[in-house]
Image (tube, rainbow, N blue to C red):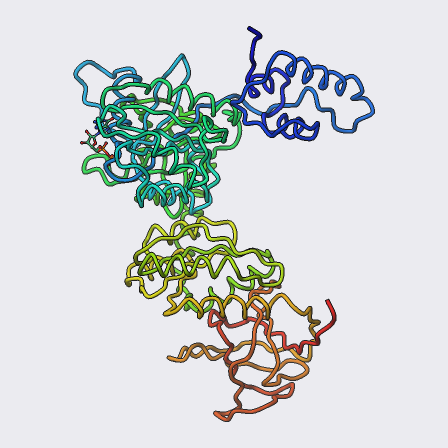
Length: 570
Ligand code: GDP
């Protein structure tokens, strides 16, 4: 029989990424393969000759294809385990810990630091051992991607459940590669085939069915096939070509923190790049300190933590927030200053976010030509109808993408998912209102959240706002400038006490809010007054009161540029 070779192996030989190799092969007319797919000897030779040809005429090429410079050293993958409750996440993490983590001191109780490192075939894998997608998304929400690979656990008897779908949507939104672990195959009512079918429905087509999703069937309880899972994790890590520079700048992410009665604030961080050492001055968010001790997943004190490692940090002054990154500072003073600056930022009063961010959201959507939606409805019927309708609407050339939908109220998890989105994302509820905790969380994450009684209200809003913003193109004609001298915070919003420095302000004009030379907001005037009277125009050299539509976050010293719009053909 002829020898087969996997795509990722060939890519490694050629010193290029699997992705590039596959793209090249598609270009040459081959079907799109997955890195774990294999090709026969003939195809292998063909690929080699193809790249040799390219290498030989590389002088003519500005960017040589071979060899490709690789930055840094390989580092262990950081893996998170997600899935529906009771599907076996904890059991799986415990089993891996029991069999693949070298024991600490005899009799020593290993207290979890929120992550541990397992060894398989001489290679290391870092597992975040707080299961659940909340931690996963919190990290993601702050823009720091702690996790490299997500293991989605699905119990073979239960199949895909509500939280499984939620987890899938979170993982997809974070752009993290997924491995499916079908668990509990030891049970008599295990039905792996059914899970396969459900995975296809979720657009996670298993490799066995010609798709791209790596699936391992295992039993966390008996330990069967857990080794296969570890192997697949390492395989995927290889394909992802995870590298880091231990001598480079520190990039570390806090994944957990708590107050220890004897040790004070302690935090677990995952090191993604660089090295963290004892006695380093560090800052994370609004807290700082000097590293008193570093403790690894086996409860060993270490002098330095390197990429891919999870480590407990002692010595911070306050509890840091999970998801925050850690920075090394030159000395105590600069660490303190950075922390204080962040504290001041945190303290700044937040403007009335709800209205402002929905308006902003659509403005951003119009620019990015994309808007993401998370939909929650009170019944499955309502939800399905909403999805159908939304898939039917087209607004100019803006795409609408539903990244998550479900039955029930808007939850914290929806807010986190929205806040982790790179594109503008609206969380919409139909016939269900979020509770005040969720509303507060949305405000603090600056997430746009809105409840509608009927689907058409949402459709109308999307269509109207985007159409307004996208077409036709308009030109701004500046007619005056105003400076804010005073602010009055009233129940209807903020009124700016202004002085017209040049030109004039008219009631029908639009305003650009300029702060430190930067445009913060653009919108309409809601009211224009002179000495308590509504007026149509205020000339240069006079004072007036201005209230803007949908924007209250004004400051004394802000410049308001007054302009009229003239439509021009796009
Ligand atoms: P989690 O909520 O996802 O962390 O689930 P747990 O790990 O707590 O597991 C829930 C239940 O399923 C526990 O009673 C486990 O003993 C059981 N369980 C987990 N994995 C397996 C398995 O592979 N086979 C069987 N039969 N039971 C399992």
